[in-house]
Length: 114
Length: 113
Image 1 (cartoon, rainbow over the protein chains, first blue to last red):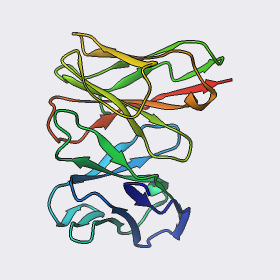
Image 2 (cartoon, chains in turn purple, red):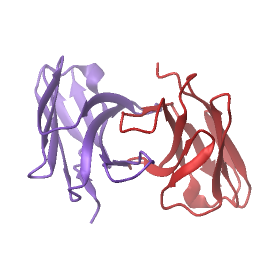
Image 3 (cartoon, one colour):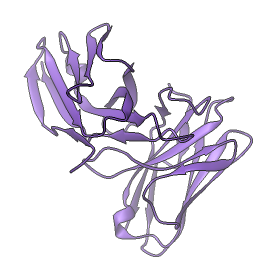
Image 4 (cartoon, one colour):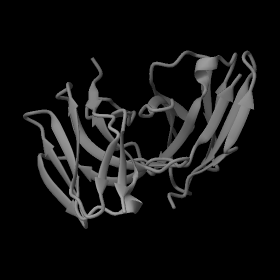
């Protein structure tokens, strides 16, 4: 079993839809949570970074963390064709010492249709 | 722009050869990490350098090695290339060792034939 599970999709939605992307994890030592967006032939781009359980909003994006359920989500409101990309969740072990080792999900491929 | 640049963008090598990939970080970014991303997968942690010393390593064999230089540049070296080494290699940097998020370059696409 992978430490971080993410539905690979692909997910296809019409423009303007609300998108929900999710990851589950097995290690309760994960304390910091991130969402990255990766366009084709590009590196991952940081979208959201959270520490505590609850919601964090940034424009059309909302990150949600539920540590008791070991479940994180990213919501995209009013989705646009430019949101079409692969979305990666990532987590950091607080006990990893001096190395900041990110553990990633496998990514969800999202297509927003005009 | 993240301020992390990688070269070359693409590279084709033959099995058994050696390869060096390069990364240039922002000034002041003392931590650099390297990740391997196979097609359709999330990035996998290779190792991290802080102030020119390796201070963390993932589940990769010793033929994966690195260097970090005082001018905020770094290298990833892979010896005895195998077909499974074909992947996107990503470099990420940050100003410290804490849990602040990493910012990635656009990677080097390595193909081993």
